[in-house]
Length: 189
Image 1 (cartoon, rainbow, N blue to C red):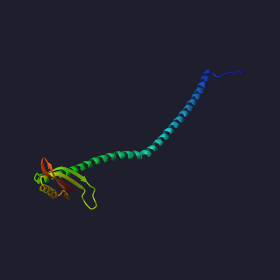
Image 2: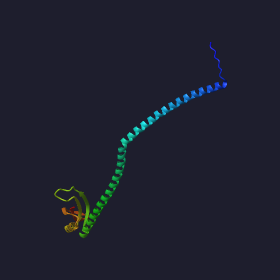
Image 3: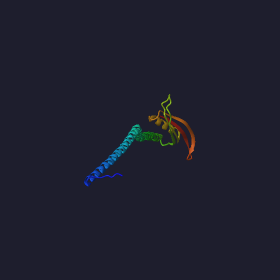
Image 4: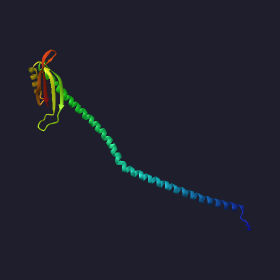
């Protein structure tokens, strides 16, 4: 058995114990700091790697995003242009139709009121290589006599709207107990 004799005063023993405790806690604190720093470093590395991957994917898909936004803008522009074009074409068509109907009314009045139009058919034809005729207006109606039909066709020719006015058929029929001459005219323009 060994006996140990401690000749160190109590104050010195307390200081020695305090120094050993401080050294132990300092080592524990350093180890914890090193472990926390290592964990933070690993987490920072993971965040940076994920950021790099995200940036690479965004850079890869940036042209697609730009194309999508361009497509949306272009669709809006196309819709606007289509609406404007449709409006312009509608106005042009209506204006020419109004002009045609006005000239038909004037030509019918020139026939002395002895003629009326029962139907009209407007047909657009594709241009033929040998002819410039693209549209034909077919008129069907009735008149008291052939003279009224002749005056009507002559007035249409003189209007300058048609390249050709041709009487395609005539025939007799009874309308409201009176004999009339039915006719069909083709006006090409």
